[in-house]
Amino acid sequence: AEGRVTMRAVRVMTPLRIDGRLDERVYTTVPAMSDFVQTEPAEGVPATEKTEVWILFDADNVYVVARCWESEPDRMVFDEMRRDNVNVGLDDNLAWSFDTFFDRRTGYLFEVNPVGGRLDGETTNEGHTNFDWNPVWDFGIERFDGGWVVEAALPFKSLRYRPGPTQVWGLNVRRTNVWKNESSYLSPVSAGVGRLGLRPALTAPLVGLEAPPGSKKLEIKPYATADFTTDTVASPPIRNQPGGDLGIDVKYG
Image (tube, rainbow, N blue to C red; front, side, top):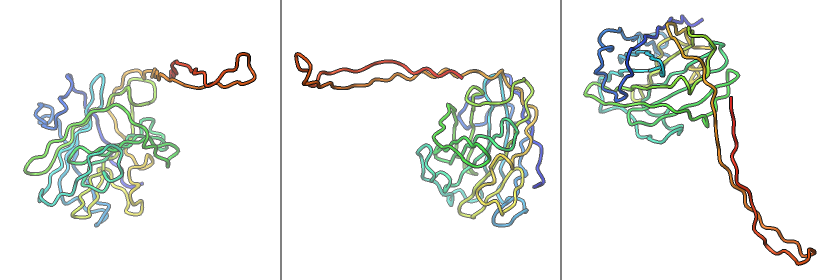
């Protein structure tokens, strides 16, 4: 009960170009969601820097797009460019979480910084987040005089969700501004949760989303094994005879 808002996803008829430039018409015709509220340092107070967010989708992807305004761009903090490095969270960044089953227990976490560092993870049982989960998704970053932009395309096939075309997911978005020590959320959360404000239980309803039927994932992983056999009792004796096996592991589901 943190005063959750309801967010709306909007369909686009053609796939977006993932370049961070926001030059498609949709960004002028669809209003952004921008009422971010601080968790730190001033809990419950509107964020001091404006952040505009759009949630869009087409037949294949759900798009998370944000324009992060910055009054003093030269003071932004960022240097981590590796994937799944926790230092992404120590930079200026934008992060969001989807609770695709809207069960308050499971979800997906994404985090990006202004130089292309990314972090992604899968949360289970309202607690543990597996950062070894590395789905296929694309994003573009663009910096401009007044801040930076992130434009991300998340394929539906990389996510699991309830069957049926009409979806209600959970969503929250967090903006971190390091030089101000400021953290703000699109759906407000209390300061007492610390860095756990994106956990599934604290997401807000995301409506308007229409998803394709969930696809089964076919994973094929080749493998090879090698061994050497020695048997001095055999006739004739066997010494370091090479052997091995080649094959594939197939996982469907």
